[in-house]
Image (cartoon, rainbow, N blue to C red; front, top):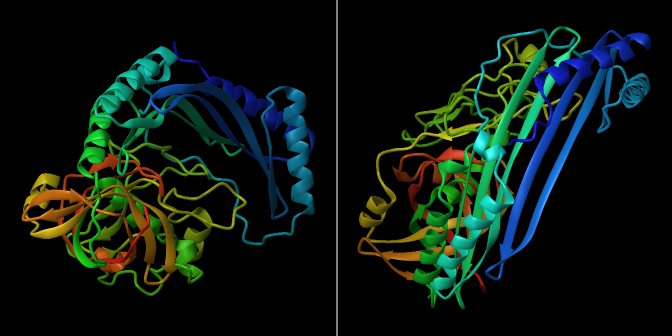
Length: 451
C-alpha cells in the first residue's frame, strides 16, 4: 500500500498550530509551505543491482510578514514546540530584515485548477517490482555483449501552501523514472523516461533502445567539424532548447538580463515554433499553484516564432499593471518567477521520416556539459554523447565520434525543417518537458571530442 506522507487534513491541523503560535507572538500574517516526499530507488551498474534505497522526509517552511518586512524559517519537526520555535525564528529574522516598501500583502484565495497526478500503483511500487524490471533490462543489454548501468526510481510527494488570508492549496503527485546506459567496448547507448504512472513507459523497450544505439555506434568514425543538417532526438532538444526558459521571466526582462529584453512581440524564431507553459497538459507534471499560492495560468510563450507571454509573480505583475500568472517562487527571493511546464508543439514527421529525408546529416541522441557562451544571443556550447550517428542517403550508416558544438538557440529555432509529435522527454541538463524531435539545418559542430 502507498505510504501516506502528509494528508490535506494534516496540513490544516499543522497550520492551525502555526497560526496559534503566530498570534501568541503578535503576528497576524503568516504563511506555511508544506512539503513531503517518499521515494525509493534501485541502482544498477556492471550488470548488477548494487543499491536499493528509500527515503522519506517532510518539512514546513513558515513565513511571517509585518511592517513591510518578511522572512521565513524551516523545520522538519512537526511537534508543537518545534513549530513554535520556527515561528519565533521567522519573526526574529523578519524584525532584523530591512523594510521593503514594495512588499505585498499575503495572497488572497483564488481559483486553482485541480490536476490529478497521483497513481496508486506507482506510489506502492516495491523493491521487488523495480528489481524484476531492472533484472530483465540488464539481461537485454547483457545478451548484446554490453554492460548496463542506470536507475529505476518511484515515489510520491505533496506540496501545500496555507496562509492566514484563507489560501489552502494542496497537491499530491507520483513520479517514476527509468534511465539506462548500455556500454560496449568503444560505444554507448542511452535511454530515459519519466511519468506520473510507472505503466506509462516500458523499461525493457528503453533497454532495447539503449543496446541498439550502442550496437549501431560501435567503431565510431571521425568526420570533419562543420555545419550539418542535424536530427535532435527529444532528449537533445530538451537539453539544449530548455536552456532559454528562465528568460521568459518578467523580472529578468525588467532587469535586462533576459535575451527577450526589447524583443517581446518581435519575430525571433521560425513560423513553426509554438511554445506553451501548460501545467494541465496530460504529459506534464507539477503543482498547479506557485510559491505564493496563485493558480498557474496557461501561457503562450511563443506563437508562430514570436515571443508573446512572460511569467509574472505578484510583485512583477503589480509593477507591470497586469495579473500574476502563477509562476512566482516562494518569498523572499531574488529570482522572481519562471515557467516550469514547457510544451513545445510538435509536428507530424516521425523520426524515421526525418532520417529518410536527409541526404547527409547527423543524428544526436543527447547532449551534455552545456554552457552559455553569449547570454543575449543564447549561444551555447556542449557535447554530444551516447549515440551520435552519420546519416547518408536517408539511412543511419555508422556511429560517429562525439562532437563539441557552438550553437545559437535563436538561430537553431529559425532553422527547424521538421518536427515530430511531442513526447515527455527526460534529460540531464534541464527539467523534464514535452518536446518533439527536431530536424535542423546548419547546426554548428566546432570540433571532434577525444571520447
